[in-house]
Image (cartoon, rainbow over all chains, first blue to last red; front, side, top):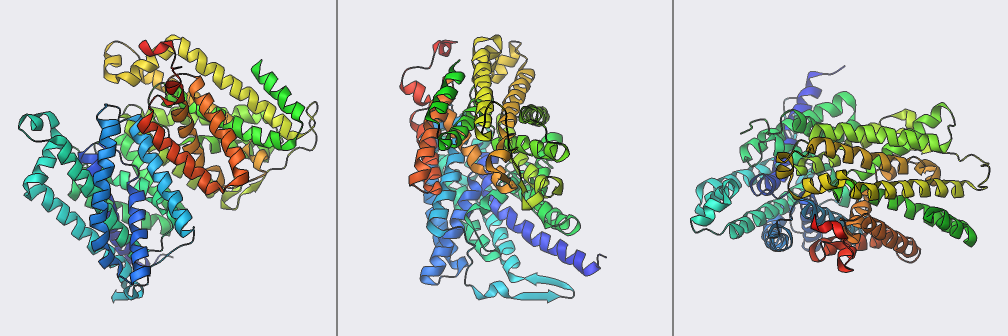
Length: 290
Length: 303
């Protein structure tokens, strides 16, 4: 029989997890929603970020959260070069649909194999002590390993949103997503703006990776579980809206958790993708569609 | 004709290993050429190759639970089921932009894997043993029989692919790939053509999957849905060249044989790493693939 405490715990844990999903999806919302670049390797970048944080944690005993401070700028640079390559090879030729997708698919796959060759297929985890601490509020548990990624992701989203809405460059990026030609007529360089935005999306992936290391043990193929979630959230959140992303992510987290309770954990992976298939079929413009 | 010659040549070598390696190469020929019908001609990316292959394989397993049907029946059934699922998935998502179809096929693979993992009738997560029939008339060993059937499917998919290229369907596909809005505006029935391509492509993948349980003798979801099927089936056409039927054939033969040779000497991870790097290298540097480099893209390019 389902008790109240079991149910409330599942919902709270789903909220916390969903908040973290929002952090993972934030970068994809920018690259896919705003820039129209279907970076299906985004979750692979997140896992790569997690392994970078893991390596820093092992080698220098850096806290995963502190490691994020180092990982994020490095990933910004990686994203900068990745966009340069992508633009040069595909976007410029107007050939970005099929070959561009295959490019990111190849990146995702190569990244996974490189991680397997470097770290093996065993689960790896950080040595941070707080990951085993749990606060209790009445019958509801708040494990720190879930609370920290939730808060960290919220910080990521708020910061990204502030950048997009408050700064000149951010607003220009929003402009490029609406009408690149008009922007070019006003003297801005859409390629430069897209490069900044894509680099930002990869930087966010790196930061989310460090949070992933706090949340759970990592293995090279874990990114696949996130492909469905990330794109379900990006589409459901209305393609390019960060607040929408957060709401969609939290919804998904709660539904996933409830599914594992009612139907068993082995059904949870299908939830995100089922969600996505239903969204694409019924409401491709997202929950808060334009 | 070529199929018979290949089979005779393999038989002449008479080594069982040749048949085991040959089966895998032929399977990739089917997957690559089938993928290209949708991916290369129409320009819609299918990441769910493993899903359609596994659909064929598990259709075989499910049928085998009722009665020991002959393999050709299972292959036809596998093709039918995969084709119908392809049609359904296509109907739901092909009206959207191409990228959504691509993501939906990724989604399909995960949803199906979850379903199969939870479906004990076909072995569930624990996997299932497929026992090969002991005796097969005419062919002698079962692996020869499977190679022969796979060779037929490979010949079939190449023939279909070639016929499409020379028919008005091929023109319609190319029109969609080059500019879907313009194609629609000039009266090309885009949705119908896309559905035809998706169904055909998926059906051949399913047919290629049906003998898989008997080939590996022990089938579990994580191996049937292995991502390397998708990577190889996408890499082979893109490396060979997507604009003509012999592009994916060339890519599949080269990569397939190279991998069979390489698995003996290097680990399978490095093997896959090389495939991935080749895929990236070719899409960036040689968008026309090998047949483009060799100047063989065919006369249809000007259309």
